[in-house]
Image 1 (tube, one colour):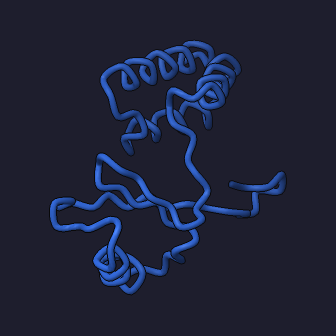
Image 2: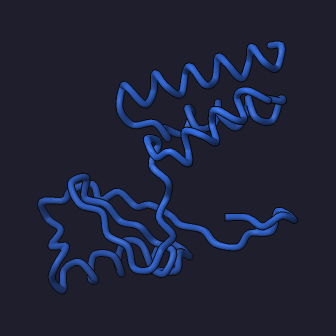
Length: 123
C-alpha cells in the first residue's frame, strides 16, 4: 500500500511452501520452518508475511492481497484499462509477467484488460 505521495505505507509478502507435506501448519514445526526459511534468510518482518501451502494460507498480521476475482481488483483493472496511459499498460503487463492471475479464467480476463488498455492507449 502506498499513500498519495507514493510513500510505502504497508506491504505484504506471500511465501509459497514448496513441500507442504513436510510442513505442520498447526504445530511447533510451522514456526520453526518459517523462522528457518523466511525470517532468518530474508529481511521480511513476520507481521508482513502471508504463507501458503497451496491448500491453506496463513497470516501473522499481514495485509491481505485482493484476489483477482474480487470486485475491487476487477473494478480497478477495468478503470485503468479504460483510461490507460503507458504506465497502466506496463502495470498490467507486469501483473501478467509475475503471474498475478493464477487460473486460466483469470489469465484470460487479464489478457482482455491488457488488450483493452493497449487499444485505449493507442498501442
